[in-house]
Length: 327
Image (tube, rainbow, N blue to C red):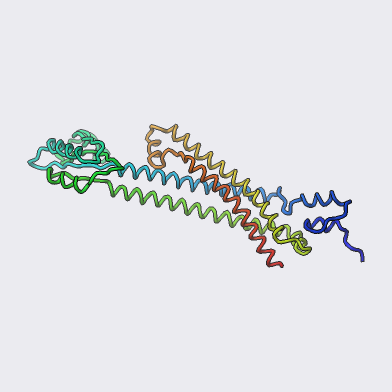
């Protein structure tokens, strides 16, 4: 019987014994050739899918960070303000009671500023609901006193309420705790939704990588079987797949991460262009300045790298498990 030529063994088993000296160039070419072809339609498609998934994941994470930051700004703003209302009562001089209430509030420790709204200003606040051109003299429109407090040394609200109630019959203090709780709940809900979207996108991407790995294994089934048969270590075969999918993950993650960064930078430029407009003010009130800062951009970089590493690790685990079943 004629035995198989040595070059064939060298081609399929890079870990086998060295071939004769005349086959050195052939051995070098075999070892440099990747087990999984890098330039293929499936590889380019997987890079595109990873880029899209990375982009969506970064958008979800960045949006969550923006909402969380804006929520903290809202809560700080609401927590540092309160409103004193003086209701007009029969037999009481409203202007005198407003002056007395403002003096009591100014004397309270922890109050940084006090602004008394005049009658015209108080009535103007009702125009969005009642319309313009109305005579409000017959309505019991309360007078408002806007108070800003020191967040580091907030005033004693129960004591302030007692002093105002003892001195002025129609006085009440609104510390905006209801709005504070509502804003916190709304922001936390949006952050949870963004986190769920982020998790779902990652799950979808990992399933795609799993299918792509199995497809690559199916396309190279004969080569994998020969390598496994002649004694190639499972770690070598799994490592080849891991390096291949790690490179694809790095390419796709980099593209998706850069697109996400560009999107947030473009959103910041649009917000700056719309600054001082009604729409721009509403966007800034809801999302802040659209500036992620170092933390946000570092998060996008971490997401891109994590997706690439997870892609390689997942492909290695799938191949290794398949080879163990073969053995």
